[in-house]
Length: 361
Image 1 (cartoon, helix red, strand yellow):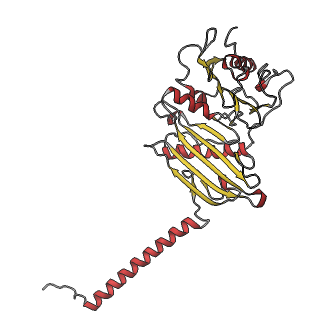
Image 2: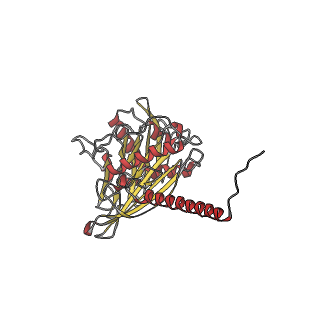
């Protein structure tokens, strides 16, 4: 004799359906509450720029409201990304609007486009990151080259950061941050670079660490330093105007020196000069110098024309790149004529870092 449980009555079936519906609604409400708490409570703060920064840290350590963000997160399959964050900070006369943009990419593949892109990474007056990290910063920009294992198509992957703020006094736009701009740029850049390697899983090397001491500041020239703008003998003596300024930063180290020269009050550079000897930064210039010297009598490979000059040579056994780029504020004098100012720049820097002469005549 078989046994089967009694079938529920119609009233019992209705009770089961009501109870099931109630439990489903309760679960949905609980999920919505949990989601709201995740997005709004300080115990689970929102992250920005691929998870590089959280609320109350990174660029937001001084607070800030009305934040807006958009981003595309890099992945192993798609190792490029973009992030833009903006917010308001300060009060009264100290109020400001801040904007940060971070990018991960390799730049153009064609030679002409790549020369323009690499040249644009250097603002002029860039400071080398401490601890021999493969990067540099200026007041409103910075770049850091990722490890070789992160290269894509034979080109180094680079994390770049640009920032600007508008203050409440003159409503003008300024590069960087209201306070401690180069040091803060370096901190944010390193965190973004570490996060980029994590999301793309391109490197097993330890995370990059920025030394706690501040970035090196500009040092006054030595008494026997060459006279002239950017410590280049005679540079700027025949410039058209009297308001000629130059920006040299980072103490003109042995593995990175960057300088920009501008005329007038608008700050537009007439020319930018750069020397780099850190291997991963030098790798950015691979394939850009050609196979021949820039001109007769030169040692190394490179090019020279009206828009700028580029030279790659061995200095004491170390690959070193010298570059010049004419800017929008050019004076059409010796100052921004690559045929005249670039040799003087190379001579001055080579002598300072102990490099054998790179050209004759």
